[in-house]
Image (cartoon, rainbow, N blue to C red; front, side, top):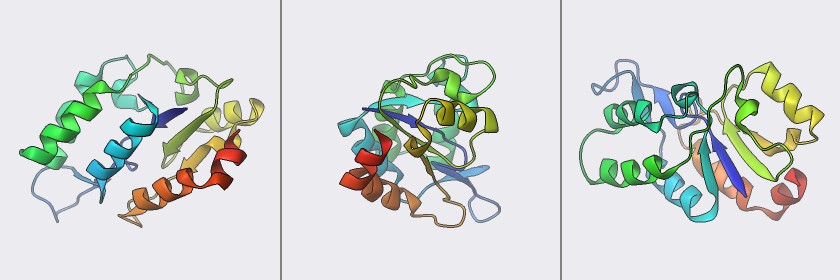
Length: 154
């Protein structure tokens, strides 16, 4: 099964003045989430940062949010291995709507939601809100692992 991943607001939260590393801070359990995702799914970036098919535009943003060290080394290896398809106007253009998938995003465009609805895949999107719930990725993992979600997404 494919797992489509947004980044801003989904895996990285606005850091404000609380963090000195930059504009973004990693979501709680980011490394654990990415390891879980890579182990169980074909992972694909659908973020404006990679819309031209280039993961190299995303990696510096992740590095700045995470900082140097072993955690970054592990996240870098995982993030660089995910596909980054080309898309033009909205994220659903990068998705195989005829296949089973899960899409994790905090705020998808209306065009993408409409495309999912038309394809009968509206239940494949999981809203993430790490700004309000910094540990929301744990909820996402539990939800995706549940039999109820897999049946609903199909």
